[in-house]
Image (cartoon, rainbow, N blue to C red; front, side, top):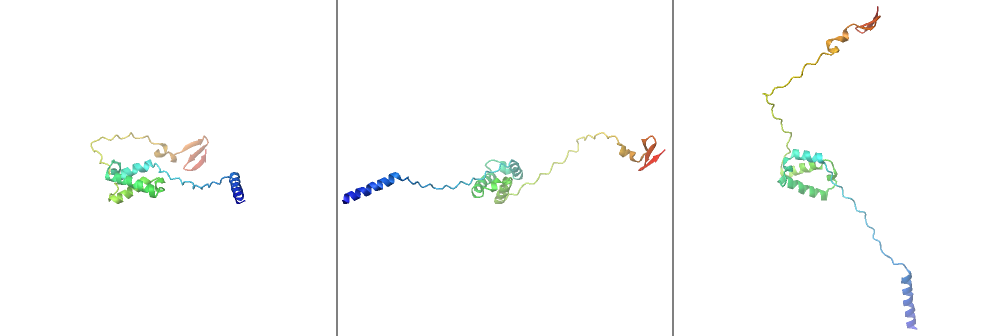
Length: 153
């Protein structure tokens, strides 16, 4: 009898497990937050290289420090690299780290005084420069205009 109860309990358990669906736990995956992509900022890159010429020299101390700062910033503050002027900002930070000041616009060389300058030919006078605005002119064969007034013949 005990054996029969045990067998019936076992059969009952087997029947329940075979009929019930298997429960699988679905783990909710958080959607990955996309990383902001760095802005190409080609104009800002050119301006940064104008301000700091050593930035354009490959493997210079300034260039290596700038690249390290870009890597560091991409990990800690990727939104900064999404801005339009990030190369200039990071170049200024690199300059502060290394104690380098940005170069300002270079003065243009003095003109050569021995070169001849061509003078354009004089243009002809137009009626306003000749003073035609104050002259008598015929509006109609019977009506004249002189100094802001109309006169009849």
